[in-house]
Length: 144
Image (cartoon, rainbow, N blue to C red; front, side, top):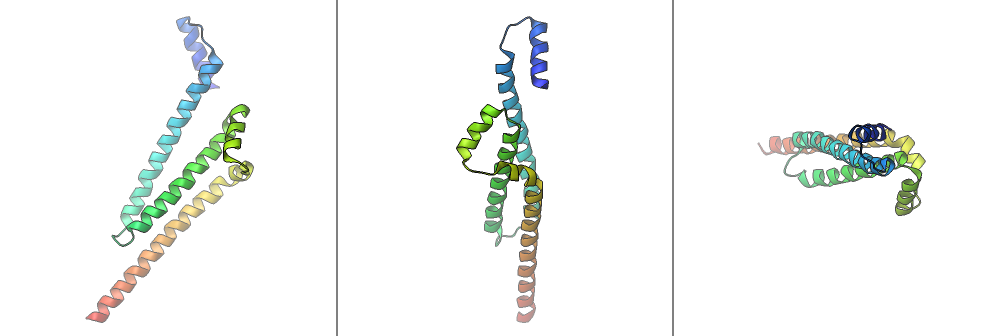
């Protein structure tokens, strides 16, 4: 574990006595939280670029709903994947909180489920926008 090794080196260098195992868990947890927050932030920035490119006043409510759905699924999936890397004592706590969830299934199929579902959602948005644009242009040409 790089965190434990780093703390050990710093404590030896500064000649400080501390419980390395105790502090390495907390430092690791904080670093994982920072990485998840950065990942979600980057994901949101890219998702907002796509939504800005294809949104209109008519579809803004649908885009907000889709964004909430995708972010919820992304966050839940990240928590499920993070659970697999936790020590057994903490893993059982998360298992008790989340209930009867097949964690192995989600761990194996995370990318296969998440990426196609996002692509399918984007495809549906594009298809809907295309249909609305064709309908509007048909009615505009018919009115002339």
